[in-house]
Length: 253
Image (tube, rainbow, N blue to C red; front, top):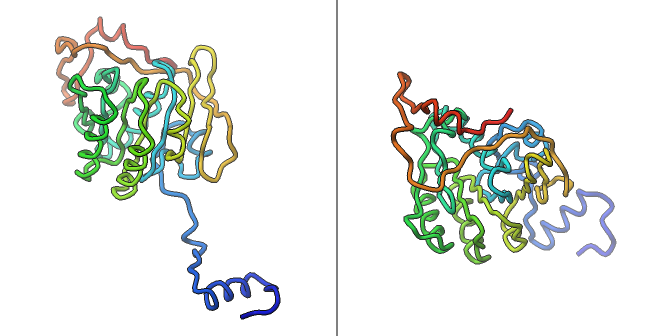
């Protein structure tokens, strides 16, 4: 055993590996997880993963219409157009497929799972487990609404996300500090009409809290069953909204 302090990083490495039998990470092993671009260039440039990190949990805290779902849909649009799949687990609100289509989402590659009248975190956990085990999706979005996901369940989801390599994006109406522990990225969205910034509360290898400028835009939700009269066939195979429905869509600029 050395009787004097190591004089170089090589001496220290030798002491730790040869003398104490420790495993040290190589330089190429210390790197952030790959990510899926959100479509917000400023945010993607800020995040070390370049977007929603794969195999990790991202938590988006926002009120309805604040722009969090739009950010997710812009990411999904890029994934779906390349033939990969995304899934959405409904909570308090149903995702409007017409609005998703107008965001550029190929609906054939977007799998929407209804809650079936059950909105408990335990039921959502079961749905997410089924989606993870299928290994069919690159990204999964889940609306918690005002519910709180217990820490134990959050850790279980993180384990499954890492095993499958799927990016899990959880939406919450309120700040839930307990859920921050398992999320590698935590974003907070203010009212789009009063604040055009995304507040980054947590992000690996980045100074936080930070603010990212964004465009004022949001996507519609619907609170009841989808009226098929508003979904018209198109020559490209996707749905189109009628004139009345198009007037309801809030696309922003």
